[in-house]
Structure formats: C-alpha cells, structure tokens
Length: 346
Image (cartoon, rainbow, N blue to C red; front, side, top):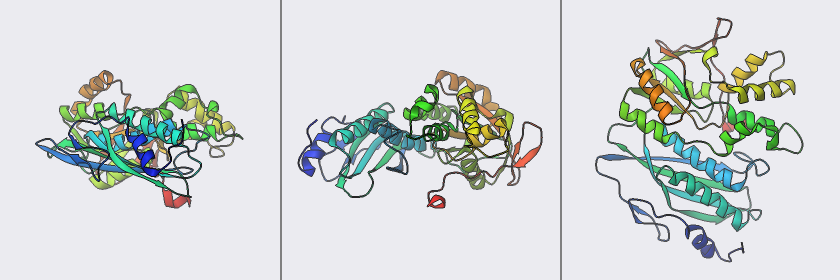
C-alpha cells in the first residue's frame, strides 16, 4: 500500500472505509460529529489509551490485534455499565516507525470489533510524533434512563460472579516474554485466542440488565482482586471468595505450571498458589465482575449459556469491609493482591 503524502490524504484514506453508523447526523470529515441520542436514554462515555511498549508490543501483537484489543477495552467499560455502544472517536499519534498500512490495519480491526456491537467510528484525530505510537479510543453509548449499573450498589449477601478466564492476558504475556526473542508460540493457542481476539460481554450485560437483579458491576482489566476491592469500597461491603471456585481451566493451569517451573512465579509456592495469584492478580482481561441478587443465579446461568459466556460463581458479599479468600485447605487469608498501577511501575 503506497504511503499517502499529506496529513489530509492520510485522514481521507483512514476514513474512506468506515461505516457511517446509526444516529450519525454528521460523520467523519467535518470539524465535529453530530450524533442523535434516542429518546429516554442517557449518554455513557469512556476512553482508553494504548501506548506502544506500555500496553502492547509489536513483537507479540500485530497492529490489527492491537486495534481489536483497544476496542475490547472500551466495550468492556460500557458492558460494566449495562450500556449499548453507539459511536467512537479514534485518535492516533504516529512515530516514523509506523507505516500507513499498519495504521489502516489497526483502525479497520478496531472498527470491525466496534461494529459487532453496533458502534461506529465517527471521527478522531491524526498527529505525527517522535515518541511511542499512541492510540486513544473514546467510546460513547446509551443506557435506558436511570438503568445504568455502577460499582457502588452491592448489598451484603449478594452473589459474586465473574465472566471468562481472568489471568489469561497476564499468562499469555509472561509466556511470550519468557524467552529471547519474545514469541507468542510459547502460549497455548486457546490462551492466545482469548488475548488477540477478546470476546465482548456487551450482549450478555444487556441481557442481564433486562432480567434485572445486578446490584453492582465492574470491568476487571486491572486485575480481579484489585477491581473487586474497588467495587467493595464503592458499595461498602466485604467479600468472601472461594479459591476452589476460581475459574481456572486447563490452559491457565498449564501456563501457571510452566511459569512456576521456569522461575517466573513466587519461590516456594505450590502450583495451586501460583495459579491463584495468576487468576487474581494484575492482568489485562476485559471481563466483568458482577454482584447480584442470589435468586437470579439460575436465570443468569441460562443467559450465560445462551450468550456463550463462561460465568462462574466465586463467592458472596458480606457485612463490613473485610475481603477474605477461603483457600483450598479451608483456611482464610486476607484478599489484598494488588492490581495494575501505571505509576507504581515507573
């Protein structure tokens, strides 16, 4: 693909293949987009920035996979609010090392992932820079007025459940970087697929919202234990999780065992301990943690099967603010595993 010359030629090439989207009065190509929110709905907005070397590496993820993950990060935030995605703004800062073709691959993959949930890219910005490649996606959605979920509504006695297989992204990256040069071939195909093409939970969240009963929800991209703590603090409750109930499948068990044998996990820990740290710890999985009315569990299980979403009941909320993990051995330990913090690792 030939490199366009000017900034405006690049912009024209980037927006030429974008679908218009529903509710778009004025789309890409003008000074701003004009969008029409449907009657009886509130606007929901979120944004995420991916910085090369910080959020992704091109020796592990392709530009298209990075675009899909950028969309997934934003879609997960809207799913956690029970919102329906509508429109997005994509802004790129391009260093000389990025070609126009790579930018096109990233944007088109991002647009496809958004379109699968009914959203369209309606504008953005393009700039040149000497620093790392940076992509910022702002996603706008709608939710029925007053029906949004938040992380602050859980009640003592709620069930706690999580979607998917938390820890997958951390395991994939650790395995990919465990040798020189880095290679994703070290991770099982099943594990890699969860990371390079993260499934959206928007449809499932909307189904649960229609069913009612969710008291609190949060996206767990900073780590299951850390985001659980955020929801507990916002709700004024504690939690009691069961280590034996955590969703650890064969792919994660294998990853934890390989990392443990290679010295990548804590010394002296058992394979079960390593697996638990992987599931609970800092990760980059776009899954949902839900706190909800216990009487809804059977219905939620059915909806999860219909939406092909793995859903695991992992514990309950409690009075007070204590967060504990009941271990495989039946003992209780404080659940305080830290999550991702940009500034703690500078």
